[in-house]
Amino acid sequence: MTFLAIILAVLLFQAWGSAQRLHHDSWFTSWQSRVASWGLSGTLSLALLVLLPAVLVSYALDVIEPFLFGLMWLALAAFLLLYCFGRGDFQASMSGYRGHAYSGDFEAAYLAACEDFGWDESVEAPETALEVHAMIQRALLYEGMQRWFAVLFYFVLLGPAGALVYRLLQLCRDSFEPDTAQRWLFLLDWLPARLLSATFTVTGDFIGSRDSLFAGLRDSGADAGALLYRVGVAALGSKGFSDPEADTVFGPEAAAQNREFDALLSRSAVCWIVVLALLVLFF
Image (cartoon, rainbow, N blue to C red):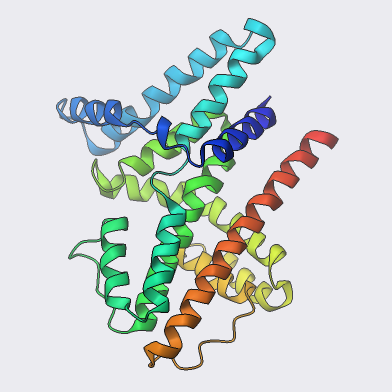
């Protein structure tokens, strides 16, 4: 049933073009305000914030599972999965960055990224076009991972409630107890980031990227975005940019690399759908 829920969610996502019509988070904003007013400790308030909705969802799914041969459970699980997918238009962010990069306007690319990712003065501003590209590409790869891969991972591992916990943590990452939320997200991102990096290696240049993958696996404290970028660059077989100092040369090359990353993420998604189908078929 879990696999059928995933397939149904993916089909609905493809039919709608996005899951934005289900992404209404005003209830969660109100819930944050209520929990904050109780004056609990950081860890306790965050746990209550994300775990109580997950427990209620799990209970509701258990109650409706026997009805209509499980079809009600299937429908609710699929809609919950769609709700847990990432917010915003990822493809628009990718294509927007490609447009800025291709024209060599990395200042505009950085300003747009600050708005998209909520970067503020606490984030150290990059000094060169190459640093802008690496910084934005790391953020985009992490965005790609947290939008679908980590959600699917916890959906399969822990069910819809697990996927909901991950999404709610992401929603309060920069607003409600951000330090505590970031620590928990680092732990929850740890395994999905390494699995997706391994998928980059399998669906890309395996020989050229395996050393980067093994180095990343040995570095248990590596940030998810940095790990995905390092392995991803190697998986693309990239030999570096011809002239990072010349925007007219570097810009189109950076845009081309971003397009290749987009294709790598798509191949990785297809790879894991096939893996899940094989697991269901043989186990």
